[in-house]
Length: 321
Image (cartoon, rainbow, N blue to C red; front, side):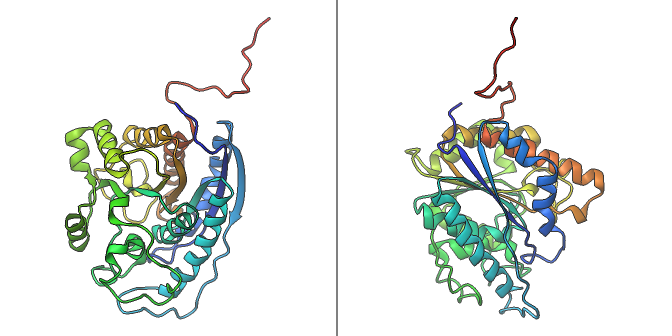
């Protein structure tokens, strides 16, 4: 398997949960670090730089902007995320973002685009998260990140308070979905209207994960040259293996399918930034949290060279007499 083009990983904690109503997602970076994520990545000959957590300032009395909840809080946090992610990627580090709810992808993708404008996005999730402020049934911004980033949707809604800094930076053709199974009507309309490649669990059951990944990567980047931004929501996996998350949906990816997705992305050698989002330890027991963290790490470490067939580092010396 080819090594990633980058030998250094920059880890960024993003303890933010105002994109949805359930407290606890801000604890995601802590639980993943405590479960050994950093040491697991270091095993694969990467130089790991932990940039710590972004300081998130709460905005008291953050009133809705129309249907959109906590717009100024989400906007301010994501401006900081964009600045930091852009800096990490420009430093030639593979940027690993530990969320946080999925609204953090606004800043992470925006910042990544500032550093590498030609990127593509692989969105692994039970949900499409491309509702506009007008189509969203809930008004929660963790269900809207892609709509604020996609150029084709810019004229479909008025500017959101707190996001004057956020100019759309990707096209619909730059996105592929894997693992969908809970998609709102407005999101389905957008996917169909613009022809966004979307592989739901129905397609995965029909085609198998190998064919899905082959078609997904070919549709997204036929020439195989563009940087990849992976945005991975743990609820893309089945809740039996990631129970500590805010919007679980039965019938998700199993651990082998999740690992295969990451292995194939690693095989491209073009992974440049990764989001891990929606781990919420307040929504599960201690056992649930341990299972969620271990499952998440066992899947994500496949992006960094972990092989199910076995692995040894470049520094390994076979024992002999």
